[in-house]
Amino acid sequence: MNLDEVIKKRASIRKYLEKPVTLDKIALLLEAARTAPNSGNLQDFRFVVINNKAIKNQITETSLRQFWMNSAPVFIVVCSDLNKLETYYKERSKEYGLQNASAAAMLISLKAVDLGLSTCWVNVFDKNAISRILRLKDKVIPHIVLTLGYEENNQSKKKFSKIPLSKITFFNSYGTNIINVKVWAKEKYLDKIKKLFTKK
Ligand SMILES: Cc1cc2nc3c(=O)[nH]c(=O)nc-3n(C[C@H](O)[C@H](O)[C@H](O)COP(=O)(O)O)c2cc1C
Image 1 (cartoon, rainbow, N blue to C red):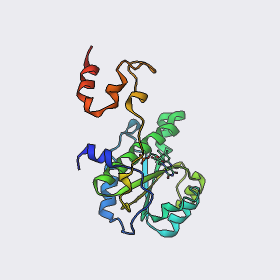
Image 2 (cartoon, rainbow, N blue to C red):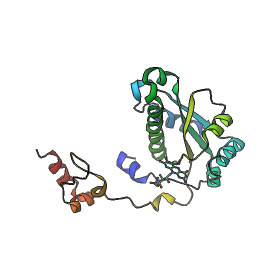
Image 3 (spheres, rainbow, N blue to C red):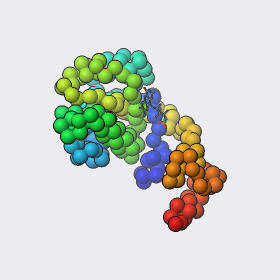
């Protein structure tokens, strides 16, 4: 699948087939994840892969009891190990850890689509509870639970509508939209936009 197709197809999936996800596929996801940009190349991301039903259920319980999560055969918990980050980045380390983990999680989400898999990003859990459940070491912070599996019933076809670019993009300073909003709203005008953007 090419990158545009992957990006378009990605959607949060909340119901999965009972089909297991093989380890070789999980390895490909994590191979993608570890290439993510990260502060100082300290590569603080840590991944905990869970396929144990009881552990999944405990995580679901601590994620506001979103029981749909249990239909996913695998969870990947994306964490950040703050140990080195704190040495180098002091008070910025927590924010960097979160950003690094997010970059890695995004790559997992996209690679999953490429492999015919789906994910949903979950971040409402109790961090202390997850740390206990997964026996995370001190300073290893869980940031994102990604549910992973094969989607049931083509849910990704019913995508949420997205706010048009014209409403969320500005040029040179916030609030300044120098381009006719109708131009931005339509993908077919992308070439025109490119010309406008490169015009000095
Ligand atoms: C930080 C974050 C937290 C999220 N937490 C949850 C969650 O707890 N439960 C859930 O069902 N979806 C969660 N999502 C998924 C969003 O609801 C979803 O990305 C959004 O509705 C856009 O839909 P899409 O991913 O299909 O484009 C979360 C996404 C992010 C980025």
